[in-house]
Image 1 (tube, one colour):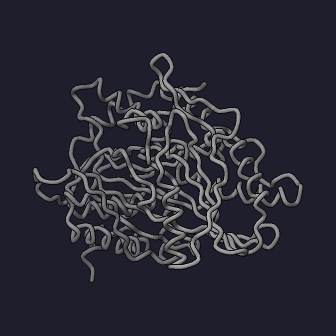
Image 2 (tube, one colour; image 1 turned 120 degrees about the horizontal axis):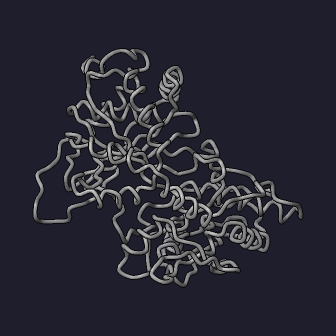
Image 3 (cartoon, one colour; image 1 turned 45 degrees about the horizontal axis):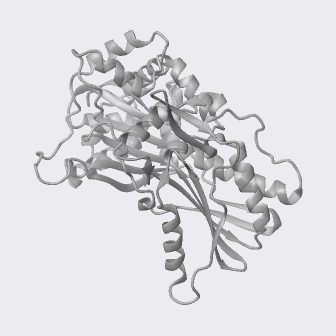
Length: 443
């Protein structure tokens, strides 16, 4: 057995029971002749390859541990056929959702379920549901890549064209805990002590009625490929990465609501270490950046500020749970509380959602409805948190969304924030030395 990761501990101990419906779902539409036996063999190979897909959690002497099962911890491929009458798509969606939303027992498993719907002889829909404690957004891309490579290899009776040496989720958990033992606490004590003010984003007055947190995701006009490319070129000229550029624009938009010195969180896939790029599991974390906000700063100044804060944070990297525990020991410093965050999703496949598999099978990855994975626990670190939800699309553009708390944040304010993000992203690369306030005020 191996120690559980910090995030797995949060999943496990935040639940009222060991049964959870926090599910990550993947759905593929398959058109053409499907070899079901080859698919089952590919699924078995996928689970053998990635230990996280055959892992359960168990308590041992008061410590939560990962127990890796020797054989695949996956339900057999369930095959269903929608009724011939009625709305076929609606019936198919209902059948898929019922299988995906079924809760998972983290201590007993199986933690992975596969279901195949036979629409007709040449059309099928495949879904795989994995508990979030063992899978994140990055992992879904790896699963899709490896599954269909294994399917092709099974039919061709050849080795699959995928990396042969892969580190596992258990390896990550061991590394995570060893990293937490390094002498990095002094840096974070200073950084967190300085983040005393909050980002002055407009909030509703709290009310006693209703929940304190009502998550809301609002999508806005995407940034064009031309504007996105121009922003990234500007960042490269300042020795900053695309992620740093988007963080700088996010901070610039927030700065228009007032000056502050606070914490801006980066939702990190934790695959910056090359050895974990092919690891399936739940590795993501929140990486705090101590930042200062002022609309008197220019994009160039913000890029330098974010670049330096980003590099310092990663040089002194600690898991957020370890930072939280550090804060609990320092009563003079306020608890870790993010005012804003950025979640940047970069597709491994450069946005490709379709591929051709062996035997002329056409495979399309489809988006699953967001309510299929039911959340049993609130994993936000602050009920006041505003998150920029950004996704690089296959054409080089940027999809823009803002996650907020509808119990606190007014829709009009969220729309204003998103509009200022777009305005700054469009204009600032053309005038990188202009103050943010001037860019936003220009007609």
